[in-house]
Image (cartoon, rainbow, N blue to C red; front, side, top):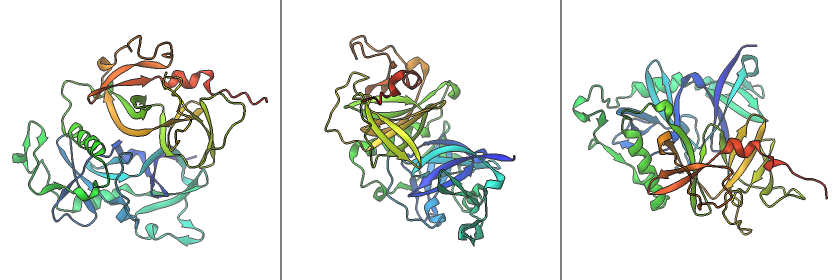
Length: 352
């Protein structure tokens, strides 16, 4: 069977797939600098380690209404024939192998407009959701055809590998007006981190972490185990469970058990807490959702930054604590998700 790997992502309430061979990297959305008199369909540019990366309005290309930017949005960097562009999506879902014969060009007997335009190359179904498979080459061809400044031919704007801010590049404040000051600062820190070249540091050694807020503190989850972030809409309670088992949710047909790890990491359990967001984590065949107060960032941690947790930080509740590391002006605790999911924490006694 001929299969190809696709990155599945979400725009509003629709799912799309793109060949992983065209995906260069993924990170949480930073601030995007807008080019005055930008070509249609181009949101702006991002200084990605000295390279001027055009950012395509994928929503416009697909005929969707673009929602307000959120901290949990992701930017996917696509590359084809050494040309790159970025697209901002509301959620990166998973990587899925799809057989060629599972992709059709018709939906309910009708040829989709996106197929007619060449934007999509086919349609498939994953877990009862319709997924349109997109053609990344078309997006890249469109972006590269626009007259966007390039640091390779604008050498006077580059110093020590860092692109200088041009008067023609401005941050469009309206895109971020709905975010509070703390959220804006997070976006700006992401932009600054992406702008700088990483010197004397092998990027393969860096540990990518999802930074979340929990009980007024910061925690880091290794992205290798994180599958996706999701909003919680309806929780089905499970009888005869310990306090850390919140209940089950139905995530696109898959039943996921939600965990409240506050007590596990030594934080007080708040019975009145509203469960609105969760981090879905996977380890082999084990899947769970961890309830969090906020999904804040993706940070890259050098192994040398990881330090043993102070003995008094969580008293005896440190079985799942991998260590602590600096995050902005504070310290965050790194949770060992592999150890957490390998334990009997998900075992539910259903006997009354």
